Image (cartoon, rainbow, N blue to C red; front, side, top):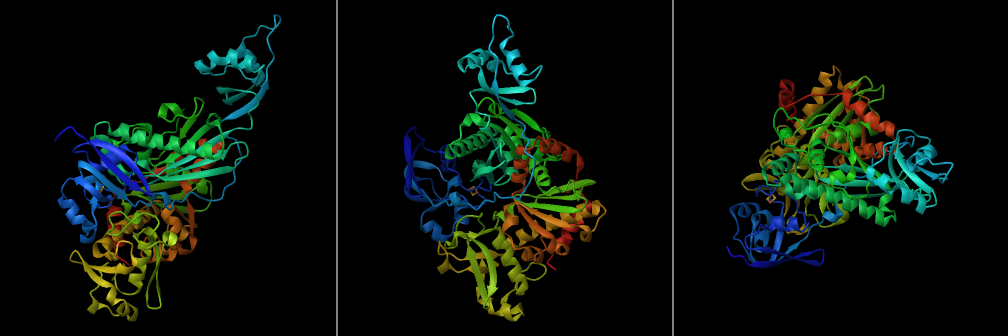
Length: 614
Ligand code: FES
């Protein structure tokens, strides 16, 4: 290896970006350093094949055996490589057709109504100026104007108090939370009061900009989580944080700077001064909270799955590394356990299931599957390592909800019909399409109740026989062609393989079994459940009938399903508007009993039962 510095040019969305690095630099790491994030569900281990990038020209390392296995011949011929398995050996030009900017991210939740009473107040004050007869100190004058005693005030603010009062002719606006004085602003800014509600998902980050005076949601920004190129699921992120030097710091920096950028973008787009953003409320799963707060997450990954802390956290934003203004505070909602996080607490808040007489079930299918059952008498929850199959990971042609993803599949005129996101030529299939295609193949008798893709001569139904020409073999296993090669962007067919069906069976069985276990543990039956809240992006797009058909959701509840979209984001938003709901989140934390499934014999039994298709 020499010390020479090479130039790598990236062509992306019609623009060129130049990067430099020494010989032997890993291409994925170079891209990460330059804030370009590829899909990397396996965390760069050369297992998933999703970090594809095209080499236009240049000098790079030899194709590895992982690449040879994971790339098709056509992709190899076109110059595709896996970024995590490629090292820079000279100047190079690479290109990316990433559609992450158009990712379909759910940022709308339930409609809500709440009394506006945020954890911050502003008041315009005309303070009496001092005189020889009235020698009260500046702070006392401020407290008297606010009708407060024994306030807490940051030392730095007290140091600036004399000039703030005198320069503004004693007309200032106080920003405070109860008796904590957070800021003193010049003149009357009482109506300039904003907050940010945030849902940090493993895959996506959603930020809502809210006017705290009238409660209006002004804008929303959604992005894929900048940590995604360090691993697609919480376990690979925890491994990165624990095993790499400075790994935790790196992941924390990625998410805090992403949040800061998103907030600054929202403020400038909506012409809002950053200094008028006072509160940020965050809902996230327990691992994302650890990575955001810089808490070592490794004990969550192995039994007994112990987080550092699950309580409500309130600290100045600067202490998390989010630089908005010195008065801005971040409220991180409380979690239940290592695998039932503040996103679920926020979801419970948004549905109000903790206050209802009726028994409700909430299922959140994301990178993991979490379930909560209960009513105002109490709640019970569990989490299943369902894996991110419904987000397209571990599925041969699986992709996230991006432009070109097949998102619906149905039978029409005796053949397969599909739609794609944004109507683009298909590039793969996302979760809702995966559920549909499985339901269609079950209905057509092409997949049997054990999940086996039948050979052509065993197919008995008329419709199944008509689809026989779509049966094929991929990597020596049966597969079904959803989109033919001539229809797709790559020219390769998009298929569902036998292995894909098995992956979905494992994931749906975990969620179905977890649901059954908490229903049993509470001594209830499915028939007693009045509502099934389906949370998360995937829940918003799936066909409910098909989700029941494949056994993901209980058939007894097919007509009680309510898609609640981003329930975590909605819960964060409600908590931003109401201090009572922040307090409520602490009560919910104590109301929810957590059931550990990994050691539950009932779960093992149900898991095996739920593997089949009825
Ligand atoms: S193969 Fe490169 S990230 Fe998975």
